[in-house]
Image 1 (cartoon, rainbow, N blue to C red):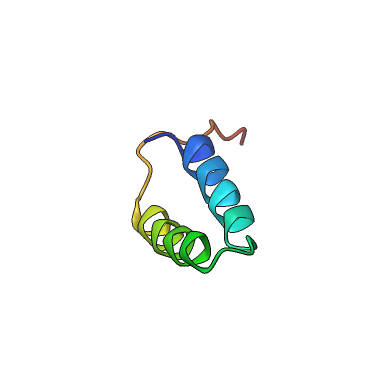
Image 2: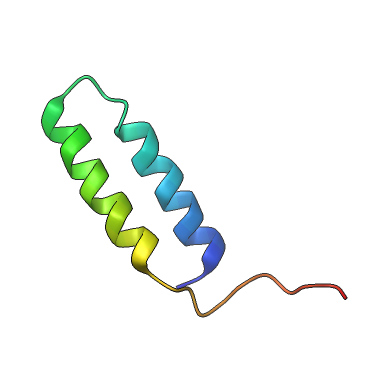
Length: 48
């Protein structure tokens, strides 16, 4: 997984976590936790 794509997915889930529907909030919380546990193998290049 690419770090920037994982981070974008987490942001989307965080937005869904603010939804009025309790099931959407619950599912978004679970998905956010799963995404946070993923260690991306591709990260942006760092300029040293």
